[in-house]
Each structure stands twice: as structure tokens, then as C-alpha cells.
Image (cartoon, rainbow, N blue to C red):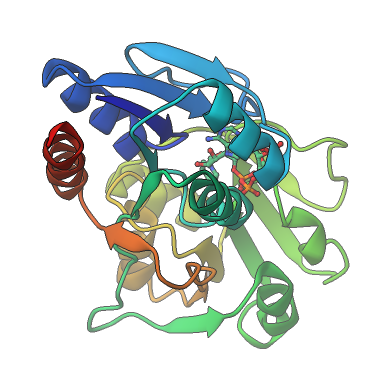
Length: 247
Ligand code: NAP
């Protein structure tokens, strides 16, 4: 059994490790944009495939029994390419997507359909914004004229001159998130609905300090794809594909 695992997430790394321990041959694929990326165990290839056609060609040259897309919930281009290429080549495909976040009592969340929509909404919600949306999409906030602090893993290029910058990679603790919001007198937090525990403390910190949150909705998944929310679900799916391909 050989699997192409489109990674770039903690779930991708965990899945690579569990599948390897179960005797499955895994090649993980990373986009290669993060400078000091955390590497999964086992075989890794790095860099884009060259669109859906490039991925289809790769799959023809490197036959696999299944593709698991464990990319980030906002990596919608890669997911669309994976779905198209797997259909073209006739390979089984699964999308592993961790659940999104849901508001709880005391939260003041404002949903936006995109980072552009979030930037448009921002002046109506606060004046000192903490942007935790990554590097991509930051430009949408360049002309709001508000005080901004952005947190990214790697520095945006070119460096924005319209906001302060923190370079850091989660997980972040609740105590640190609370003191960061306090120190900078943040009165609005902007986030993508990435889901997962590693970066969720900022939401709890915002709730405790009464800071409203603008949450960018996830892009929709392509129709007709099989989706699981957990690494365990993905392992079971791979095992099912493995059994049926042996018959
Ligand atoms: P994207 O917009 O969906 O993808 C853009 C292009 O990057 C794809 O068309 C593909 O290039 C290449 N690519 C993306 N993921 C790849 C992978 N796993 N292996 C090989 N090529 C890949 O994705 P993105 O938002 O730029 O994210 C890039 C990577 O960072 C993903 O693996 C994702 O899991 C991770 N990440 C993204 C976010 C986020 O907020 N977007 C956050 C954390 C981590 P070609 O068309 O040339 O094949």
C-alpha cells in the first residue's frame, strides 16, 4: 500500500507517523514555503506539482494506491487540484480536515467570507487589531488606517510598513495570549477558522478580555469528496482502501 500524503499540517505529520508504524508506504508532500518547516517522518517531497495537470502527471509517474489531502483548511487551491488530479488518474482520494472552531457563551464573533471582507468589516468592530491570518491575505488590511499587529510564522515579503509584526509559531498558551492582547491594548482579533488546539488560546483570551473576534470562514470543499475530521478516521479509510485493493 502506498499513499501520497499532501501535508503542511500537524495532522499530516501525525498521519504520516501512524501510517508508517502500520506498515504503509507514505510519501509526504510539502509546498516548501515555510522556511523551517516541521518535517514528517518518512519520505518527503517538497514543492508544487505544477497545477492539477502536474499532479496528475506526478501520479502517473509515481503510482500510489491513494491520496490523502491533509493540507490546511485554507489551502483550497491544493485541495481543488488534488480532487481534479485524483479523478483524472482514477486514484482514491480522502480529505482530512480538522473541525472548525465554534463560538461559546461570552464570545463576540463576527464572521467574514474572506480576508478582504474581514478588512472591510474591521473598522466597524475595533481600532487596534491583532491579525492572526498568516502572511497570505495581509495586504487586504494595508489601507484600513488602523493600528495593527500581525503575527506570522515567516516574515511577509516585502515587509509591511503599515503594521507591527511578531514572528512566532504556535502552540501558544492562554497566559501568553492574554498578556499579548493586554500589552498592545488590542480591541479586535482577526483570525481564520483554522480549527485545532494549537492556536485556539487566542479565542479564549479574547473572550476573557471581552475582545471581539472577526473570523474568516473556511473556503468550501469541492463537491463529492470523502472527508474525515480526525487522523484516526483517515487511518481507517487508508486501511479500508488497502483491503479492497488486495481483493
Ligand atoms: P494553496 O493556496 O492551496 O496552494 C497553492 C499552491 O501551493 C498549490 O497549487 C501547489 O502548487 C502548492 N502546494 C500547496 N500545498 C502543497 C503540498 N502539500 N505539496 C505540494 N505543493 C503544495 O495552499 P497554501 O494556502 O499556499 O498553503 C501551502 C501549504 O501550507 C499547504 O500545504 C498548507 O497545508 C500549509 N498551510 C497553509 C495555511 C493557510 O492558512 N493557507 C496555514 C498553515 C499551513 P502547484 O499548483 O504548483 O502544485
